Image 1 (cartoon, rainbow, N blue to C red):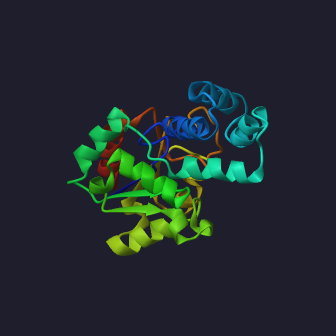
Image 2: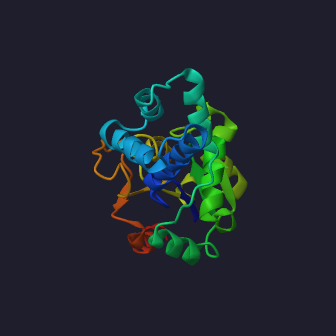
Image 3: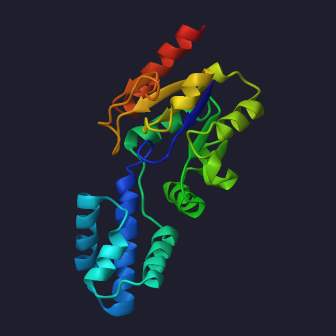
Length: 226
């Protein structure tokens, strides 16, 4: 069996990275312009909670009377390149410790390649996986739901699709094409997508509340395959 994990909101709480990045931008604003960092962080967090991430820096800079394309780009750069302080879900650490000497483990994650690398660094995940695959390194068109990275894993392991189990959280992209080609899929109900309803085609074949439930499910899947 080949066990493959998603990263964001599967192994750790992605919101913690977002807040870490906003804090880095707030500190940048204080260092460059003297704007109080805690006040800036509260302002940006409020926008995040009300509107999502799309216009946070534009709105924050506009409130300071300093919204230009160049300043927004600088904020994005600070956000992407900052070194976050992150922690795995406790259940994620337990699962990785349990299985990394039992099965080949892989990580497949979408996102900006520098951002995702910084997350993996901060979480100390490199030793846990046979390979970490950041899909953007293979071209944006190979981001999920593309099966490009999974096909590379399958060929490298010389296994069938049915030997591969993917654990993720986002039913809008994580599972749909893997379901079609016969890989086994597991949705973990953590993070911002936990309450999202999905059609059977897009949802995983198996659902668990958190990674504490993964070992029992894996035992069932292995038993059913033998």
